[in-house]
Image 1 (cartoon, rainbow, N blue to C red):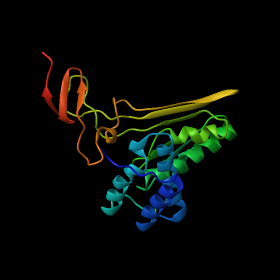
Image 2 (image 1 turned 135 degrees about the vertical axis):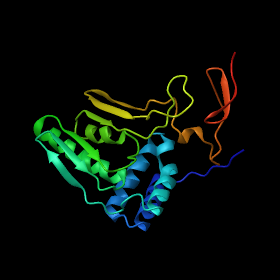
Image 3 (image 1 turned 90 degrees about the horizontal axis):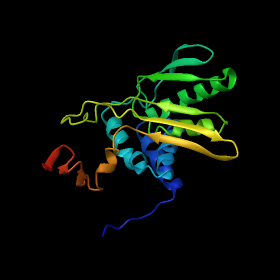
Length: 217
């Protein structure tokens, strides 16, 4: 039986922030990125929480992420904007862009902001949750690399393309929808030691994500 140890979310957030700061991420940005990861864990989306920190660690180590990006607004109107993330952490760039969208929504009735030149931004649900704090409807979407095989396909060709929507419920609890197109997140399909778990789907079992060992005839 695998032994587990539980840590307070504050401790995990501090650890995450210190890892980001180690790579030169400014303290405020590091805390923001850590908050996005912590939000995933607190909502039970472990695949996108602190457990995913190793991915950002690797990308920062390889120099594939700019730890100190200079965000810029490429173009904008009273209710729209395009933000260039300067290849910064998606966990930092996306929340900053989200703030712009919320400000525009407050002032103009709706706010739509697209982001370019950045990377993985954590759980999509984090962003509409910020809208709820202002009693606004929130909507977040993103593309991704090819991770999903089409129906009856054998190779990954489609992105997971996450989408999240949240809206206030007046006197009832708010409704939050946070989803992606695959049956399960890639990270969740792996056990703690990195080995793929065995799945049974549509009559076939696998020992790896892409290698069926049996097929229903």
